[in-house]
Amino acid sequence: MKRFVFIMLWFIINQVLAQVWIRRYDGPPNDADEAAAIALDASGNVYVTGYSHGGSITLKDYATIKYNSSGDIIWLRRYNDSEWATAIAVDANGYVYVTGYSWGFSTGYDYATIKYSPVGVEEGSELRVESLKLNVYPNPSTGYVNISYHLPLKSIISLRIYDLFGRLVKTFNKESDEGTHTIIWDGKDENGKKVREGIYFYYFITENLSSTGKLAIIK
Image (cartoon, rainbow, N blue to C red; front, side, top):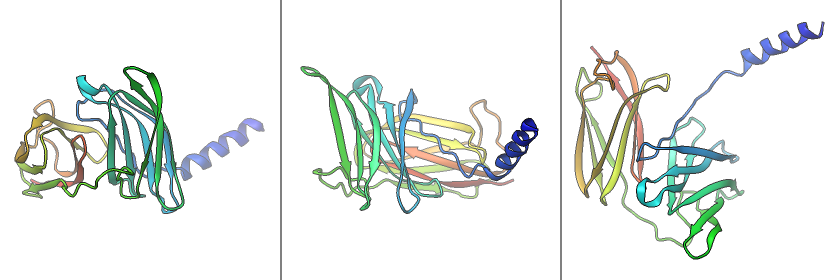
């Protein structure tokens, strides 16, 4: 009887708890990243923090992402120089608090706590007015897709294209100087195979800026 009840409960829960969305974050060096904490606000926004490999210079960085209730990135902030975020909290006014430990050359590991405003600006820092400009064309496309972007500063960039199931299709990683640049995707996956027609998601990220969107491949 107990086994029957367990099976029935498992069936009911399995039918109700359907996956709504899943998002993956892979930092610009395409190296190790690990989430450590998650928080929600009253509007259904989701906040995730942890560490993200920052390359040979900064090693591990804080990486904090704010998603809306649909899973779209609202902002992404990195705090770098050998840090590891371990906890996150959001207050009633939407301010975000991230804490963890930070390496000091003369002090060893220290506490490091950051307060972000609701729009992701670090408290006490100057608001940067530059934003990521991204143009994807043609969209829909029958083959080649141009992804044009403008950078206010020299940056390591990463462009990832995913299918509807969240599977990584194609990755572009490079260092770009300040100015306007274009990446051309030939509509093929990492193995050189032409992708199927349908909807794909692109995720473009630098050390401080990001952009996401949809593109369609048609025949």
